[in-house]
Image 1 (cartoon, one colour):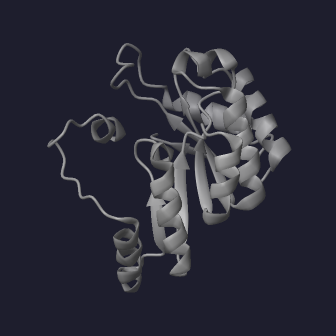
Image 2 (cartoon, helix red, strand yellow; image 1 turned 90 degrees about the vertical axis):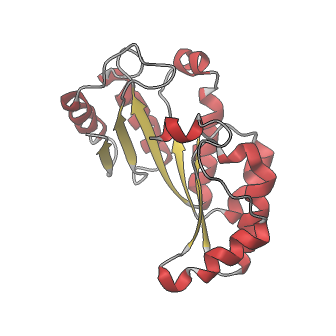
Length: 198
């Protein structure tokens, strides 16, 4: 589970520190085994912006690709500087209300800007974790899908089912049937809508 990885204490999971050069060389070394590059994911990779930038530069120099999984919370100038190095991005769009983003400690407009800018430069997919009682109304998912379609109808949207974990153990898992219904609503606007954790 992601929460187990992200919340692990020192010594609870095995980690290895790699310089950008060693990481890029390792990706290249693994090419005969199917490696196409490096994916920056788990926790928020952009908290180590300089590391991602330096690795991505070297990975491109070796003729391989960079994939970024991010919450999209980044200022415009560093995002524009990084995007030429990113071949694909999966960006979390945690909902479509400023109130939900405020509760989570983020900013909806910043994430929307990140999605729009990325869509101009690389392959983009968007993931929304559907949380009961927070971002699970048909109205909200339709507004989210309409906005995403205004950027590009071909951007894949992944609607993922919430399970109670870490700081949100007090609510039930999102019902599978509801995820399917919301996906059908979103398909009225987007070409590619997928369900996850169902």
